[in-house]
Length: 405
Image 1 (cartoon, helix red, strand yellow):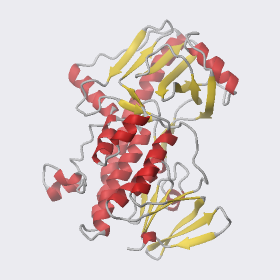
Image 2: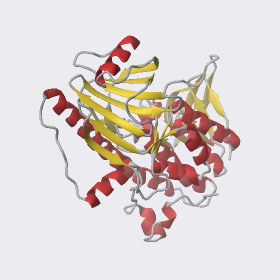
Image 3: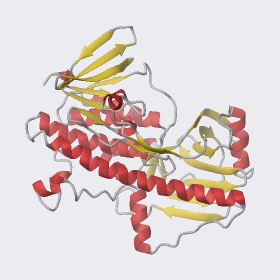
Image 4: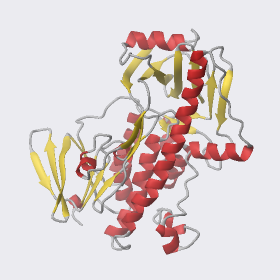
């Protein structure tokens, strides 16, 4: 198989993990990334326990445990610092009873080093400008940073290029769904905070909502809602807004990065069309409050890689690839449902506090609470409806990674 038979567009976490998993299974994919150098923005930071189990199976768990803060609980606080809601990860049916929290650029550093150890190469400064069907094949145009243009016909294109995916546009497959009301702010700050560093926290008060998630080195990732009509802020305003939203109990001493953004709940109608495959943000977008978005992209790449490797090695029929779209659509839609529930719950509390209304509460029995917790940490996926179950046995054994070594 020629190296250019598999082209992966985008070297974020999803693209890097898909490339490294293909390499682990003996498939030499070509991975291209438009950015000339790595970014240094915290972005998506939560690695869920279900994803840590996957990393454990491929030898990556120690690197993530060492590089991250371990978040063992989530708490929601009212304006008087009273606890309004909470979730503990202790007791989940998983080896790691915590989330790992680290900047996205650290996740990418770990995954790129892993890819390199497997013989893979990342090509930077290469932008996919066109992906088009071509007489039963796929034609891709790549623009290089030095001005050169390259045209190739890979047998498989995996697009992990994010929300503006050129491959998704070529499939006429828009991200369908909704954009959440309002504008939000994300920032990477240093601060002595009034909460433990093994905890994710939401603060809801008259000033608005703020989330704090710990990052290594005494830093925090914060999400804040912006007032109506406000679409951008300065670094100085990040400091003052943060101090106000925790009632003066802390003040940032450094703002490394910040950006206004919108939150979305969106997904494509199809993740694949035979030769073109979508993973990560190219296929779905979710609210970051629950921290599932990055993880679902990693799960996409993990699932697609072993199926594709079996097909390319001649050990499975090409129809196996159809199960990627079916299975991951089920899983990704479930992630969006869970994420939407978390988003609605947090914003419902925030709106009630801001408007002086009674805070909504939900009394769930222990069994229901356990199910919700398992959904949050991404250990509840069930592919019972997959054709693989019928083809390989009711126990679904073949729907797991068939090449664990």
